[in-house]
Image (cartoon, rainbow, N blue to C red):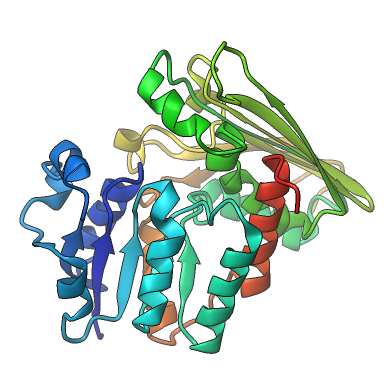
Amino acid sequence: MRKIRIGQIGIGHNHASEKMAALRRLSEFYEVVGVVEEDDSWWSRRGGFPEYQEVPRLTAEELFNTPGLEAVAVETDGFELLETARRCVDRNLSIHMDKPGGEKLEPFRDLLNEFRRKHLTIQLGYMYRNNPAIQYCLNAVRKGWLGEIFEVHAVMNRYDGHDEAYRRWLAQFQGGAVYIFAGHLIDLVVTLLGRPLRVTPYLTKTRDDNLYDTGVAVLEYPRAVATVRTGVTEVDGMKHRRLIVCGTKGTIEICPLEHPADRYRLDPLHLRLTLLEGNEAFEAGTHIVDVGVMNGRYDNQLIEFAKIIRNEMENPYSFPHELIVQETLLRASGVQL
């Protein structure tokens, strides 16, 4: 089995070290050749993380000139993701790119078109795509267990206390918390319901600074409505993250969406399945379903990335899907398109 030679550009994204850890675990799929961080301030803060120990620190040119390099994990600070992705596609490299895809739609559209034109892979790092509870829910919907979906309610909150430096960074984005976090949820809603007819954002500043730290977006469909709520002010908010999918024949609720990182492989996830009518697997009524443990937050996604590059599978997320998610995220963030 051919290993994919891959490097990582950037350690400034909050998910960067977790991606590197996953790539190094997946040694049967990847050969990690190095990490690039051109900003010494980021390196001084995070370069000593255990995930980067014994990984060569390279310049961008050194990485791009590595013989046999096929892919890059783009993990820069949020402002630099799109520019870095463009540098990679110009070098004919496939990428796993962390979210979000920039505050303007057209540059992201152009980027997708360039990857499509060159027959390269771009995978967006939405972190719930391979979550076993989410996968179970999506499969139940595809099988028709829930009937016609008419309501989706998704919540992704956290508590950042009084981290003023983080709040100042987050406030630089027009949609604040919604722009940075809601894409993970919007990706799920679009997977379930497609492109919304209308997106109405409600953004709030709970403190006397410039940050929209709490927000709700309402996504309207011909026969359904979805709400996406995210914020950084809910005490213990990560434990309350949830997805509720309601259909004419049943409902699925997942809460929490995942366990803390140190419990991924130890504690199984559960969901609540309520059915109006029985099916081939369950009787009518409410059932607590054990869907197993997570194989890390990104491991299965990065395994898919390798298989897509090797032409062993098709990308389950099309270019149009990625564009709809980004368009919907921008509308939810209050960006006028």
